[in-house]
Image (cartoon, rainbow, N blue to C red; front, side, top):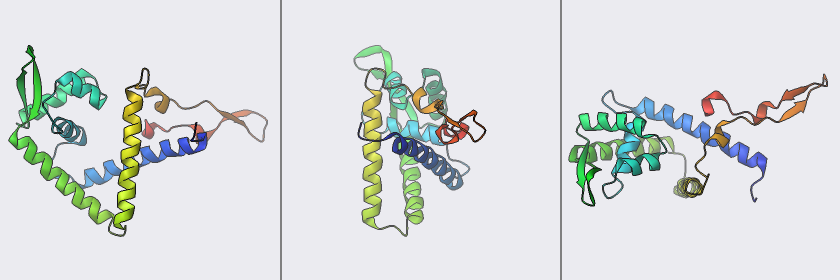
Length: 185
């Protein structure tokens, strides 16, 4: 391995910390009429290209069919997603964005990009490009790992390690730096 345990543990912590910070910024910038981040994520993946089946979308999102079904029902209710007959299998359907869904997604991402631009006002363009490149590289590594047999397991990131240290009293104590907090799950 080229990355040591401490660096990997620190990266896991930083990823979850980034996720929490991003959720906070996203929630603060949401309008009362906005959908939540999960719904917006579903729209994003549907809008990335050709129409796709719900099963393929669920796999890409890493969620179960029932969770996706609830989100799709909401998005269809708002008129953002349409189901089209699958040309290869008449029993199945494919999902695509409606015009309203495309407009909503474009406006949401434009607003989020402007928010991020304001937050990063002290950064240089090179710093922002380097951060973007690092996030892309990390995302590609995660996606690649999830496509490997057994690579889609997320329990490795969720389960606290069981390392212990010996305290001054001679007893073994869990190493607090080795645990992933409830918020990081």
